[in-house]
Image (cartoon, rainbow, N blue to C red; front, side, top):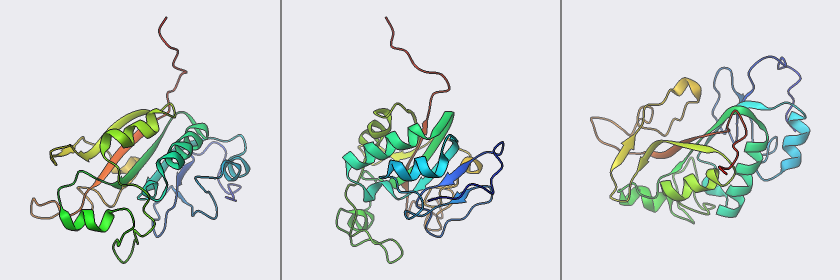
Length: 198
């Protein structure tokens, strides 16, 4: 369970899910033992009636099946405040680099610091977007490769949630060459309920 007693109730609540070694100023880093994406009761016990302003999750969703990913998206949606967002990154199934795809593939092997043996899925942008849209989120793609392997970048602010494995931050992207990219999106919870058109 996550202890939020030290966070003022009027302070923004920003949580990193599955943080690993990530630690950013103003963000609460959590591990699976504290806040499990697949255990809604963890979230209810930790947050109670509070709702997060922002959630950040880098290279975790690929460790879930698609069905689990959809359930996790619903949990995040429930525990975000209206107008809040989830920034999430996963390996990009359309990145045209054979070694990258070998490392990211279902079953591994993965890099030494991030074993891929338990990767359950490798997403491309359309499928990944649908996971979050199905939970009620409005999806903005930030970085992704299309079906032809062309890289697309939409300006985003790392202060709203840093992603290391991204165009600007990853040390493998140098000299105008892409060495490692992620499929990155923001999933926004609408500020007001969306009612279907008559």
